[in-house]
Length: 275
Image 1 (cartoon, rainbow, N blue to C red):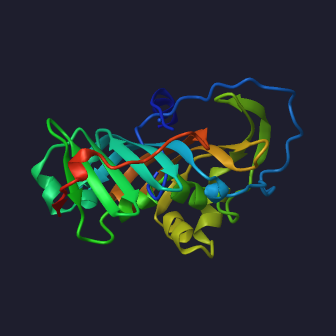
Image 2 (image 1 turned 180 degrees about the vertical axis):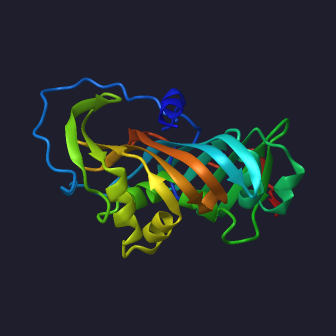
């Protein structure tokens, strides 16, 4: 699956981000400096949480080949997230949007066939906009309507996949990603799987127990801030937020740090539909 994933690309949600969750992995543009001393694969990777960032944009790409709800599912899901102190907006698109659209918008969204879905989290509440011929704004009645997308946000995924229990690997070298100096680490798949299944963190342990296998993953850490800016990994097993079973890849990338961005509800949400 790695060869296919490399041809595809990434790039939150939701609590706050811009998750390039499409489906495809592109090798990062990199400019390598001098090779660094390579630690053993069990060395702890020093990391700071992205929770300390005031605002950011990010992309998440998921590539899947398996079953969703017992039906064949091949394709991807992409989430582009903008997170600010005043709220967040996540735009979700891709081949797998249909199977999860009703999960995030309630029963009403099943009446539409959106090409993309925007999820806003603002002080007024949570709103879901189905983008078709005419945008339709829905205010979900269920408090947990967007929980599956929350689990696929850049913050949630990075927090789980770079948890201190599994953030161990070897340093590949110093590189440049999107003009930012980064340290590139390689995380051993077998060690990740064993550590995840034994983790004290319930979400990470549940994720690990649902996996059959994990490939080696690539983690890129900002040299100045020490926080993760990109993660690319491939797995086989079950993935609860998508109700998926099979092979899947995860590609997360922070595309902007503290950008001058604002999140405002569109006019279609002046009189939202309850769903």
